[in-house]
Image (cartoon, rainbow, N blue to C red; front, side):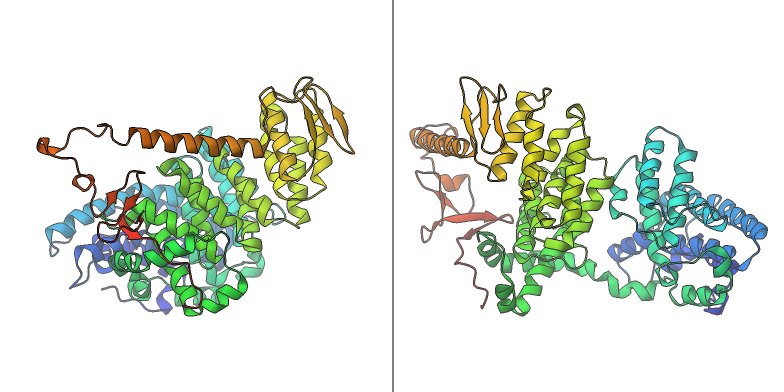
Length: 565
């Protein structure tokens, strides 16, 4: 084992030695493999192993900036980067099991592939910081957005330069949007994740002052970094997620009835109701939050998207914003193309809209910086609702609506603007409706926005005129087949009734095929635990009660959710 002390990493060379040790077969074995560990535990440590290397690499570069004159610091950073890019692990330790050797090869191949990319980023960040090539008065996220465009255009050097400026600004206290890790090319996402991880590891010494002032604090900074050095024992307390996966199924099953009762409410819990729940509030919320965090690694016999859908509604009903809940809900919207169940996205939008002021900044960041157009459109609706009574939000939406041409997506801002429920939006919407370039589709959107703002207006289908009291008549603008929200809802209800009638008529047909072995058809030949009545409603085979399919299981209808239970 490496003979390491806090004093040994108070100098940049000590951190470089630590990096070189752990970027080796011997160092890998020390961190990843411990006697008594099973393969799952070793896999976990191999997954976080790169964080150890990133931390040592960033600490070495930062302390070189602080402990050396500028020319020497620049040369040291270049040497550190050169050594990192050339890291080679060699053969696996001879005293580990075959499964561990396979893990070693997989893990170290991934590290050797990723280290050059990480190193290029870190070198750019610390050189820009060293030379003062950044502007603390400029939003670092705008620099990253430029880097995103440069990366998409395959201008790698230009992208790295912009990321370096943004990273240096972040070292000085600039705030970065967490959503960059889901944007752009695979390499850009890797850079964004590495930058986020680096800043998290350097948190004990951030924000930094300019380089000249920081040199006088070099010893203080090195002591802080040494006390926060990542190592396995420190992170053992955070490894509870290894057991959480085993507990999740039992907990979800035990609470599924209560969860269902909560999700069937018409409105989120009030402050008084949350108070009445006592400890159960945190229990419900923490389980829902863990469900989202582990949604991609759930036990195979759980309906992962079904449980996720429930968890999202629960978090919205509880208006729970602690931890990384807001980020996880936004991630569902950002990654909507990866989900089979569209309802999860709708639920996530609704849940975020219940979060109030806590969701304003995350929503603002997303709509300002994200290049994911569908997700951005959804997040505009979140921003509008949580930002009601916020002049900053209203002014932003008005600006975007007013300055965006119709051909560039002006219509996407109409509904969010109306969702602010701010009367100042009415003349803005009406003015746009008068525009000669408005298409039928645009007119639909604008009239829908006026309905959301509760504006009364009158229509003439023959002349296609719209009469808006206090604003006058707008000629030749009404879409040919336009119907109000009320009319559309009535049509939807009627179509639902027609579907029910069709179900009744076809219920006795053999659409499902012949019964097995030519015998009498029984629903429970094809469905576990339930029987379907003639209306197609799933019912309990024992008591006849209506059943609900939740989290991969049929459960009885719950009693109304009781906050005092």
